[in-house]
Length: 112
Length: 113
Image (cartoon, rainbow over the protein chains, first blue to last red):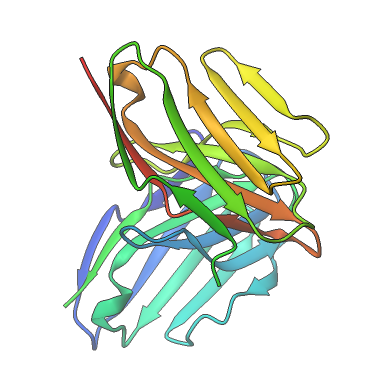
């Protein structure tokens, strides 16, 4: 595998479920990001990790909980989501936080 | 708070024509302006980027024009091809927070054969 991979690619969950999104980068980067992409809206930065430390939390509701066990892996734990949380969730990585970001293909999340 | 405004929302161009997408920003501290290209089922990929010390950057058929005083920048796709059909996002980053990339809402480009 090369680049940035995300699993699952599609996820349907109920509002009471708990699920996790996984991102893995094979680029040797040190910074990783979670973005939310909703239809006809700008990409919204959610979280930033640099060398496994969270450096940014863009006022994201606590029902989204990120985890970065190492520089290559990033998780987004989901619980008690709302239908308006349905979106494409994109992971990205970069060499450092000021550098070009490489995006994964995203996880299409539907909350029923 | 949307700091980067992008237009048009959608664009249809004939093959061989010029596609033009415009963006305007508010924060004068921004110092890096990339354009991303996104195909269905894929994440955005960096297409071309510019810094405000130059007014134009060209890579192949893709050109960014930058107007610092007007706080505007645009993407021009010359000789547009059906394979260019995708969603294009402008973005801006820099200033106080180098982590925070602000994206435009995207332009869905369709190039008709």
